[in-house]
Amino acid sequence: MSIPQIHASVATTVVLFNLILGAWGFLKYLRGEGMDGNFWGAIWLSPILGLAQALVGLVMVFMGLGVAVRAVHYLYGVLVVLSVPAAFAFTKGRDDRGAVLIYAATLLLVALFGGRAQVTVYGFGL
Image (cartoon, rainbow, N blue to C red):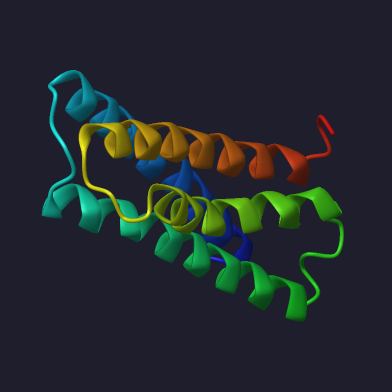
């Protein structure tokens, strides 16, 4: 498997993982549940996965394989990595039902940012 294929596969993983986490968060919210250890652990995997994606992307850039990517692609990548820590700062680490809703919405946004980053590679949109 080539580096660009790995980058594309991890990108798809970022989108699907965050969609699933966002849905899980909304389900927890609808059930009236707060944060628990399982959900905390899963949501903190989101920026780690984003960092892994960025690392593979940097390898591509240094190999000269990322030259045709539009600049907005990198902006979406930064948003993927920083969104969950920003939600944590916004909620001040709360673990109540309201925080679950904020994280669920944030994770769905992260999935959208990841999907949008994929689209920018092919020159569609912005």
